[in-house]
Length: 171
Ligand SMILES: [Fe+2]
Ligand SMILES: [Fe+2]
Image (cartoon, rainbow, N blue to C red; front, side, top):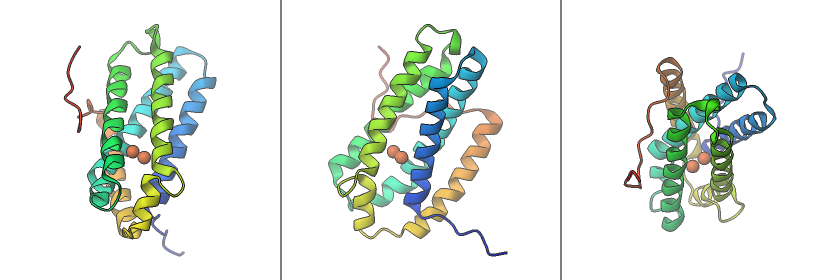
């Protein structure tokens, strides 16, 4: 049997985006507190792993090779999403009157962020591709780290997110 070919970095990250979009779509249609709770937990897990591998591997590789403002915005958008993820994970779940609204706002934040990454021509991924990053090697690194983090988070839960660009003030 031929060896499974590793995905290139952008294909891997885009697949993650599609996975999360699908989970959000399922959440929108879901009924029942248990089901919604389970989907929200899965969304938070997928997004936490995805943000971590981008910030540990992909974004640093983009440093100095893509528009710096766009890259900085990406970190801040991740942090904004992490705040919402922490809120969703720490709350009472489906018993919270604002639970559905929080998941919806997280979905909207992610849709915007994914658009900034995937936009044709000027998006972060397009710029990284144009700059000639080694997408095969990055894809291998991302896949390995993703597997490792997903296993840890599934076994012991999603850790409280760490903010990268924001101060994490409490209001
Ligand atoms: Fe992404
Ligand atoms: Fe991202």
